[in-house]
Image 1 (tube, rainbow, N blue to C red):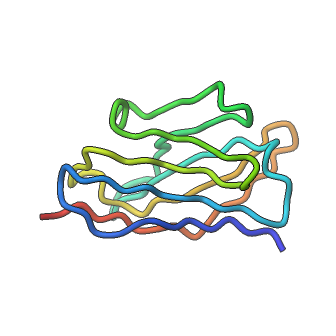
Image 2 (tube, one colour):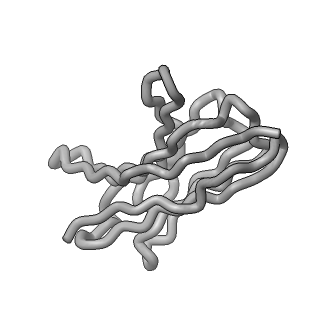
Length: 118
């Protein structure tokens, strides 16, 4: 069964850190790009970061550059999003997607909530 499962969300104070994980199963994920998206209430879903299978090409949204780090461990079929210096505006549901452009396949997780508040 194909699954993408995010974990690691929670409540954190401004300036704090969280590490999100995205574990996939049921398919060979090391040929897929990983993407982290987020969606805040009343706002559109936005791309936060992406990483290619070989981890060479990494892209960040301007709003998180210098604070967030995306990484992956192909042996564990897992991607990570290290979030540092968190701000209240980072509060959102965070979603992981595994996607592959050449066959347009993609798999989404159910999301993990991140709340940044004092």
